[in-house]
Image (tube, rainbow, N blue to C red):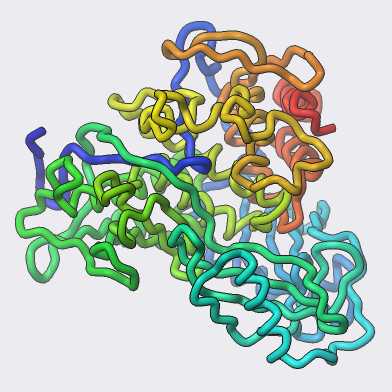
Length: 542
């Protein structure tokens, strides 16, 4: 295709990608499955905030945090640290806090304080219901032995070049009775070439490993073309820079099949790429465009300007490693990184990948569900759900949406999709429904429970055809579920994520959180509330 360009904007054919087991496409619906006409925006929906307005709310919350701690009954040794704030259209604020105890971070101690417009406390959502208290903050174990133990844990996970950073003392409150512990971050390289940032929690008295989680959140896949798009660029020192000032200064860098920070993409005439992977700029354009439509989705649909809601753009890095078949979000650099796939010929840089990875950043700034166990499945599903929503919202004429995951990349070699939202188990590994073992399943497969819930909530159960694709979504108990439409389903999930979910949210708590969100948005007697109940029952979460 021949690119068409204009000053500070570029139009070209771009290559796209989908990360296997982690990313999904959205669905436009027609005919009987068409989305219902949206009602007027509910008063409990999030208010659109400018970066400065949000900064003011955060400043106010910070100034009042001591009084808030006292109001919600925290102990004298506990203090609050402001993380995020969401304001509803009716003036209700939802302020998210971390907690400290005698100056030590309390992992699993995060909470959300809900305050009415008149200042009256409406409630508190806590990650733990336990009282945060330990007998002493003096550790019996030496940091050197803790670090060595953490490196051993990383070695068992087949992490190469494992290097433990200095452990820090924390209070571990995410599970059971709070205890004094050490948190050790072990860096290195995972077996597939993905950077590793493994967090290991160790009991400070016994040396027992209490928990571990991987901070790099990723998935695998291939690529395809998705047609002509426009991207934001700006006049630079020498020609044009691939930096989008209209979206928080998001910039795209070329790692040149290595690691590190990379080089900012530049171009003499503002014509970027050729639509083929043999031009290094093509993957850069894909990544920039994916970030662009993701930014636009969160801003126009949910009133959130940027991943953290602070008006600042993230960074995209392409051409990572040699034949790296993966893509990942790293919160420490606030960036998305994409490999080039097998033989460095199929960059993983589609809309779905960008939306999925950026949504990990949104989750990190809000609910921050631990990337392990049931909370990890919910974390991964959140990126799947909003990857779907972003692609739908982008209205790409080249990639009509559906509820099949990675159906166009043929990673299985037989034309089958990677995953199926209507019946996740069709991929051979994902879970359709909740069971007591769900927390022991890889997060990319336990996410199937929430993905199935989202499909049921959006479209309902049973057989149907949408955009030429046939679906047949079952329920755990054989019940019939009526969908409420994707538009409302994604708004309910977003509100629950930003105002109800915490680091320890499991599937039972997710059910409670989405029901609360549906009640706030549409009413406790609404069809939407009943739809959420029915969809969770349909995946055996009661």
